[in-house]
Image (cartoon, rainbow over all chains, first blue to last red; front, side, top):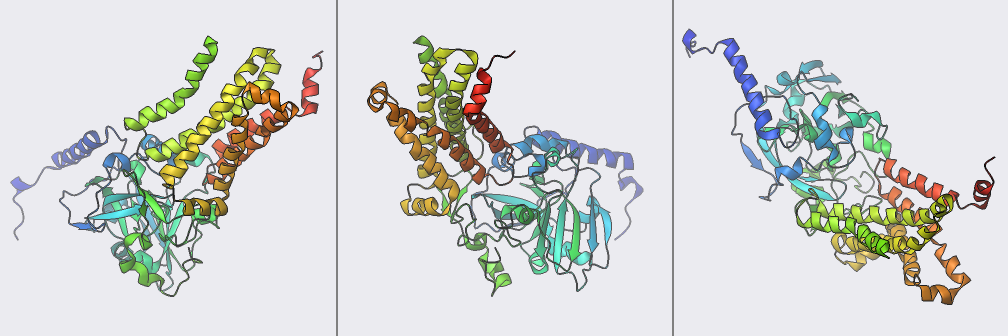
Length: 305
Length: 194
């Protein structure tokens, strides 16, 4: 392939303006009604799509962006859509550390750029008994993990959300122990269904949905899918996650969706899909049993809930 | 009398708003949860308003306030009944086996139902005829509200995941309203200020 002629190269100022224009058009066009969104600039689609929700109807954007559990921005479902405007996602960086050969702090763009984005339509089941179907944009966590060469001691992957009470007013109250911490066993983290998302519904992530980078683990209750990640750590010991710390009797490390194991205070047999009147039966591993059940073979899921 | 009619309509406003909002898609992504929470909130609020009437009448010397107490009490029962109906219908769809299981296994359901059940005899004996017929026993029976209010607050506490601030506020109000009824506290208030 020959080098481009000088006349074909876009002058840098113009190139920069184009990026700005793209950012602004995304900002104005899509988020006037629902607050701010990730500053990340997505490559142009279309993205390869994988429907992992058996053709079920996708939850309306309006609901997915106004009904959120993101306690960093308040504990009412409508709070994050309102308060997450304060979050600044430009110049975001992520630190990767612990048991790996290539630790370091990377700008979000550098972290994401090597990966081809794809759309994954997943069911999302909250521990509170409601569910949605969301088309995420992201890439397999496994691909990212491999870049950092975890050592043989890396048995778990731990994630941390940003801690900054200025941007996250919910953190001014000790409702949970901040920053929010979540974790996965290495085989769960490497599972092809586990992704890091930077967008949804073909757009960048709205702040209230975990911009600019979040985890999505579709066979676990929603609180495992940590939002606004700034730190990823490989370690040998199983971490104590935020909800385990808050209520160890109620939230375990695994938190796999399981209709046979009730939350101590409510049943998990059924769920209400957002937008529907009647409840539906909750599926084992949220309907992903075929793909993930082998990870837990021989484990007592009532004990390791 | 006009005042009472106006108050009667005013107390219906929260129910009216919930109905209107539900029919016009103003309750967000999970309207059933919003209606369940809304009716529960108002049941508790009317319970506390009812409890506030006597101390308020005593403090302000506005004796005719007592005449409104029954109305507030009946509205507490009305909203508690709607709240229960939300659970039985919209949450469980009258699956009695599951409801029975909840009643035995889940303390917050047990307490919620218990608070509602304890309101039933109060609502049933709220008319003047029953008041006359029961005499002193009427007063004893209606004092169970001192137990119902804290039970309802505990019911709220038990369903919260991590943010205790709202039920805590209700607890403080309940404790204050009940505290004003302790004879020692009342006696001190009655003493001249100088």
